[in-house]
Image 1: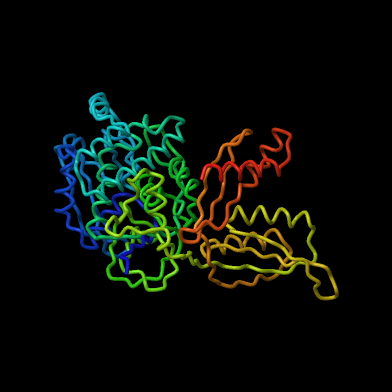
Image 2: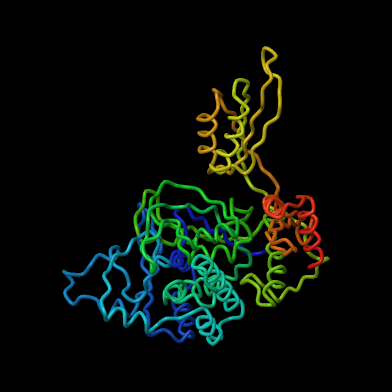
Length: 478
């Protein structure tokens, strides 16, 4: 059986919460300190942990105390600021690290001098990691997470990933969070990773580029790129930090409900604040049950190894080389809610509007079927499919936008293929391609309709021709 981990994130995810959960699950802090010292930046921080309570539940809080903070700490304890109201004078984007808190510290000339003396871009951070001679899987994982984070930040700011400087991805605490998380997962010998849907949070947070709306742009970019399922839990705080989100998007075999597993240990990593619900990331560690239909991450590893020229994700396990013919054909099973209602007295124009409103509320699919109702009236059967966390929002849309007086709910299981989005170039422009796989076998390849339609309109050619050229380009490339 493969050892797997499920990250349950009811109040989001941040790097320090990941490490707190790993330490709570048994990873020795001394081991992390020893290995992180190999990075050669140990003079910039001190590490410590503390058992804390979040809404009466005990969890492990992991701290990275930065040297710049310690050197500027007031001598008189009575004048010290509450840590939930301060920000590191050295790193302008601490929202990458401490989720659930907002910072407001003024920056003086001395502070600015310290900040500029430690600027690091992505190549410099990669050099730090490579030079540390960490375990091979830890190195590969850390590099992949930083690349993912730099690409997201670079896309947001319109610059290459290599030019993204430390206040976006290279703050000392972000390096510790990312490398420390990879070290902890390696120590526990986890082979597969799954994550829950992510709460959006709300409000604003201070960052190097001013005050940002939550979710922050980099987090939104990562969610978009990886099709991460999200929902609102009503908490107006930054819940998912860029660092934590990059870790999840790099490692996840899938997002959603937990896979079928036998739980062996639980790790609880605390966030910085008390929230309406316990501010705890819950790490479930166990073994996948025989016959489990969870997404087969071995397939993902093979794909990543090809895409990233042998470095691959942290999941790579070179002790067990697998040929294509040996790969199991397994797909994901997820829980969905099906909402149904019959309508015979609503304008067809309103039905079209309901479709758009339901998709905006989180529906995965919406469709109607013509039916004959009582008194021989022609009507439609309206069906919306969504994840359970969106059922209330979708139900509210149906009641608000239609004339129905009742909605039927049912919970079902559905099998889904692993999907990824690729981009191909045609003579008329770029088109995104959706590639669906069952295990290692590609079972469906389809160009995105909207991309083809946009090019067809702009170039005044047929949609079918754009569709054909996109498919041809994909097959030629493979």
